[in-house]
Image (cartoon, rainbow, N blue to C red; front, side, top):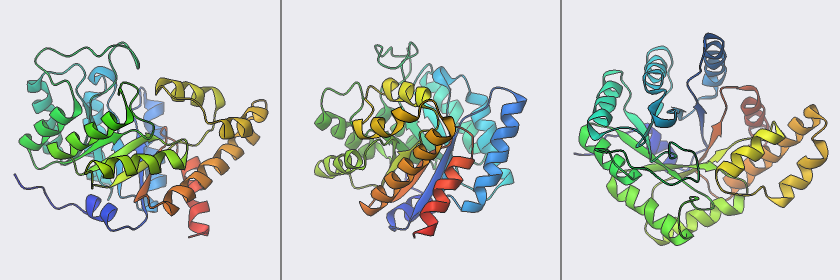
Length: 295
């Protein structure tokens, strides 16, 4: 099956500044309202794509399909639906892929996903399912004309025995049919540059987009960093720690840190920036405006 032409990958390969945003399915009507307000506020920025996450164990399966379908129907944006190995048989995964196609969604981000018992706990295969992201990529390639992205890890996946093995896994995902990657949140530009170099050394030649999450709340950011098996960079901690008692000052400093990180990543040759929005648009719009002012 030939890969479909896609402006998503073409734009990433063209070396232009690409921007993309990630959302998650809300749990209640109030969250739904916040999500769609953010989508409307971010659409004028012309993102290359917007991704919609998939809850642990497929808990948001129907809502992920519904949201991506609505993005197709009501906006000019390209939705990328997350899909994970967790908790699904191959038959169920094929059904989900068929539902996405019927909804007009032709881009997926194929992920192994965290174990049902949480990040850092032993992986538990689903009987009749697939165990690794490259297998999920291959399955999606078999099932339709999907453009498939995968995850990449600036400091290596927490379960990888070495950085070299982590790069080899990314190559396996490319060989299975993936055509781009999005990283988990980048904490240092140097980590992203090192990832790209490791990937290139083993033959990975598709675009790798760095993920960005500004520090808006100290405690929540620390939890997210710990979940990924990493540590806060000292240089970031030293700027944020003194501001823990001043939420407004901490937020402003977090935006400043993220903006400089974006500049450094673009200067290092990143094909674009992927913002983890947490369904809010304000911080992303502020960073976008700051970058546009110095474009």
